[in-house]
Amino acid sequence: MTAWVVRAVQLPDGDDLDAGITADGHWSTEPPRDAEPLPGRFALPGLVDAHRHLTVAAGEDGLPYAVDVTTARANLDAARRAGVTTVRDAGSPAGAVLALVPEVDGLLVCGRFLAPPDRYFPALLPEPVPAEHLVDAALAEVSAGARWVKLVADFPHLRDGAFVDNEPTYDLADVERLVAAVHAAGARVAAHTTTRFVADLVAVGVDSIEHGTVLDDTDLARLAARGGAWTPTLCASFPRRAAQDPAFAEAMRHRLTTAVALGVTIMTGTDVAGTVAREVALLAELGVPPAAALTAASTDARRFLGAPRATPGGPVDLVTYHDDPRSDPAVLSRPAAVFARGVRLR
Image (cartoon, rainbow, N blue to C red):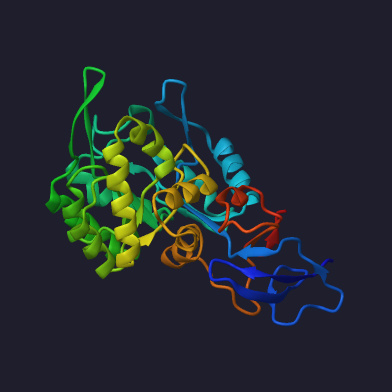
């Protein structure tokens, strides 16, 4: 069996990485005598997609539809081979992705979408959750293996086949009870939000804000103070919205640079519309320093989500590149070698 020696620039900090990987995929401080050089001159400790929907695809009309678990497994395998060794599935119809948790280390699952009737995409909401059942539904997902739950905290009403009036989906008191119950059960809450309800969500302790397109400076300061995270999912809609509304682009630039300055944990998330490489590129285009954009896709997101740190004897999470992704984020789409939880995938 093959062992490897890794000599590369450790990103995002730029330190020298000189270590060994044993034949069974564990870190070694001294490379085995017969170790082969691992390809790649630059290394990251595994990429993160903190907002992915493995059982969702986008139709030609732009609307999402559900895909089966077999397709979800293929989506996950492709992501891992591309160097994304930690994936948080941010909601699936009927919690279908929970079936993959026993198969894959490095997969975090939110379970079903928590939204009331007519307040989310119908194809993704086979089991709406009335307010009186919200806490029980969330705890059922945790009992089934979810380490996160996905709250659709605001969304337009579906009326006569059209979405209108983007408003909170549940009363704040219901959300507060949900957060307390989920935290008591040892899990965390991710909340979809694109309205000013986000201020209340931050105040009641939601752990990660998803999309967050109207976060203001006060929200970001509060989120930073309690160690929360923001997944802006730029791939999902930013290019289209920015082309239509330059003011939105400037507002998002301000949010992101403010978040970096305040120390908010930013995480890359592709939703159903992009790649981690593209998300990092968009962060950089909007003023996030290259090293900080890489931490959003790796070290910061890994820390927040609880991915394992590199320790002697521990399983290897690693992706290497021939070129420096700090200079060109597109490099992230061309890994030289990939290890995921001790298994070499490339």
